[in-house]
Image (tube, rainbow, N blue to C red; front, side, top):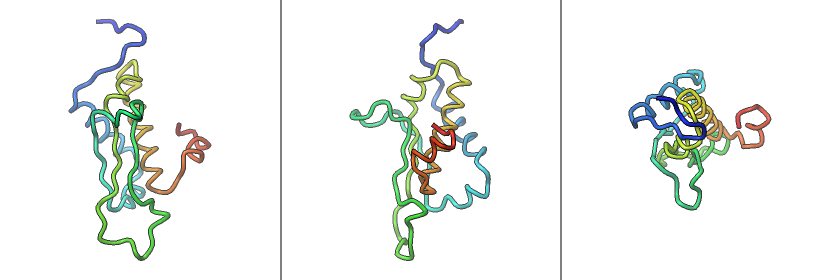
Length: 123
């Protein structure tokens, strides 16, 4: 069936989760090994006050951790299924946007801000 221009791409939760897993596999293992005390989660939708949010990092960036950093709950990277599917018109575009979002949020874990990500072409 042909897709109409401007229509969102919908995949199953399992397919979406698999795309997130593949995006994580594309991150060099040397960086993933440094992703300490951090979990990656997929949720359906962000809070209503920011419905277009694709993902976010919640925690203490690696660059801000000091000797007092211990015994804390894991940091979280959350990827939002709904907004990503709504913004993409093909499965290929969706997979690409998932990868960009995962890399973007991992970068925040390492203390890289949005401006630097933009300069590096990750926006």
